[in-house]
Length: 228
Ligand code: FE
Image (cartoon, rainbow, N blue to C red; front, side):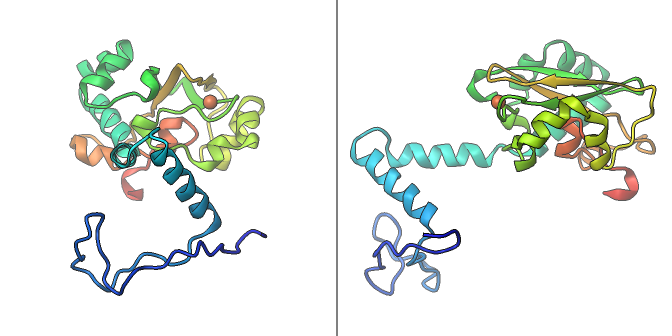
């Protein structure tokens, strides 16, 4: 089967009424399950059914896992960065006791991994990579983007970090020291980017709108007031 073809699983809805898992009719009868699934969806469904059948997992656990994933978004990290920009005491605590502060703030580090928070300044720019695979602070930034997992990023972040940053629109002054840090399964990094100029007096909520995922990886600058 070539890419893009669909595999007909043979499954069809029983009737014209869409029902939930308890057999109750939905109040949106026009919404139907897809009768034909893509090949990956079919494979995932088959694996799911087998794992449930063999008692390895139950449906509730899967729903919980999906729900946990949906809570992992870059705005979590942005909240911490905006608070660090606004509150010097919080900034110090986040830098000196990062994991405790992340947990106190209501975020659960994946795999109980340790976390280090690094601050970019006018002298130092930190940039995060996982040279081995894709280790990433998903609790704070959501799932890693595809480019972060790519071989080209994993190698070029080490060999030519300035060039990579310039491709993300960040042109560093030559006297700025670049420090590339390598994540692993037990240790993740969060970067506090430099607070943009022209944001004096902004609230934490306003500041958070400037903090992008890429700026917390360290490959890009945060947005500026005119670019929100
Ligand atoms: Fe990794």
